[in-house]
Image (cartoon, rainbow, N blue to C red; front, side, top):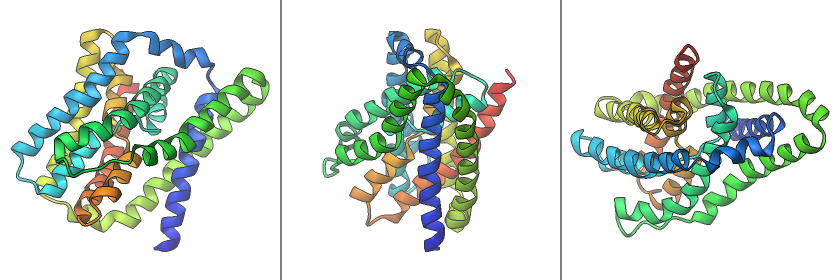
Amino acid sequence: MQILTLLFNLSILIFVVATMFSMGLGLKVNAITTPLKDMKLVFGLLIVNFLLIPFATLVVNAVLPIDEGTKIALIILALSAGAPFTPKLAEIAKNDTALATAAMLLLMVATVIILPIALPLFVGSGVVVDSMAIAKSLVIMMIIPLVIALYIKATKDAFAQKWQPKMVKLSNIALLAIIIIMSILHGKAIIGIIGFDMVAIIAFMIIALFIGFRVAQKVKVNEVVSSLASGQRNISAALVVAAQNFADDPKVSIIIIAVSIIGLFILLFSAKRFAKL
């Protein structure tokens, strides 16, 4: 199991770094920065991910008879956005990967700022969130590789064109490894989550996807990217918070991991459906 855990962590590192490199090697800087000048998009994503989804999660928690650990896990996830898988989902959906990368960066930065402030309001004043611990891992794994790749694209375009497909292939291989190893490591724990816990997880994912899609329709921005960016929660940030504050309640981390597995299949299915639109 220890070897599998090491392989799992290595696969995540390779996936995130390769994904960021593949995005950066295929994009120019203005392709990412230009979408962020659209205030309808920016405010729409922020409202969906840090207001509507958290409050919808409170409704799910109130309606379903689930225990406190599950409720806390869902709230943490509701306030954790900006995940590295977002551009990959947009790629699978045959949609705008530059916009997805911009959305990911916006939500990732917002998570580092908003999560430490908002979480105690939702789950109790005793919760302390180390925003620097979250920011450090996100900057090292996501922002630095992306910035390096964007620089290579801007200065050595031929090199970027040669290596970008290879980074995509490496990212896909790492994703497959993540799915397989995660299923082996946490399969029993996930199977043990039955009844209303499973209903809550599926409801949480579908609601997040739906809200992202509907709000984007209303403000007339890209519905597919908005939906996928909203459905994909930042599991890394959520697990950091769970480890810092709820180590005595393993249910919190188990639910977060369950959402990462179940949610991944829901998101992949959704992305493939979007690709056919």
